[in-house]
Amino acid sequence: MSNNLGGEISFTFNGDSYEGAQGQSIAAALMSSGVRELRTTRFHNEPRLIFCGIGVCFDCVVVVNGVANQRACLVEIQQDDQIVSSK
Image: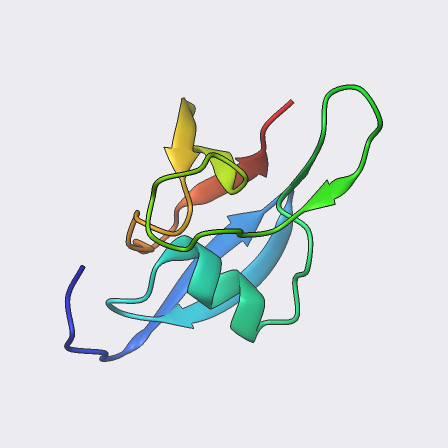
């Protein structure tokens, strides 16, 4: 991930529009926008955001532009990304 945070990036998460800074991870951009749930657990529908923040666990997996199982803490946000919660 880049250390150079720059201009604003527009993206969607579960159909809602958000903005983040160039170079931010998906998780950071969503958290700074007030999002506190990236997905829910399979059996008890418990909310999950990030746990480790370094790509070791899978609590923050999302679907990015149709590609499943992307760890939001590792993937940089890109202009017009379409991100949805993992099912």
